[in-house]
Length: 102
Image (cartoon, rainbow, N blue to C red; front, top):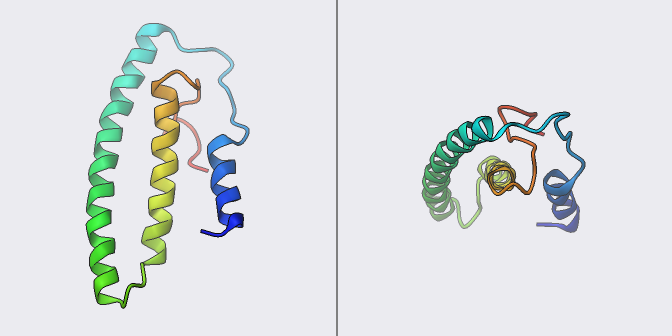
């Protein structure tokens, strides 16, 4: 990954985010945390399948990865990171679908 790509990913992870005007109450936050935990589980399954598919593509394609699949993997990783920040109360910003998927 080039330094420009690393800067872009870092900006998406750590860049300015719209903090909600009012923090969620604890029961509401618990509900969101449960929903996001389920979504993270699905995301891990998708990541596992993508890993296998990308490896097969690289076997067939002379070690060349599928760029669109690699980019989707980056987007998925950023989403998981944002979800983890909400889950651990490092941020009050909920991940997609409650906010933009920048």
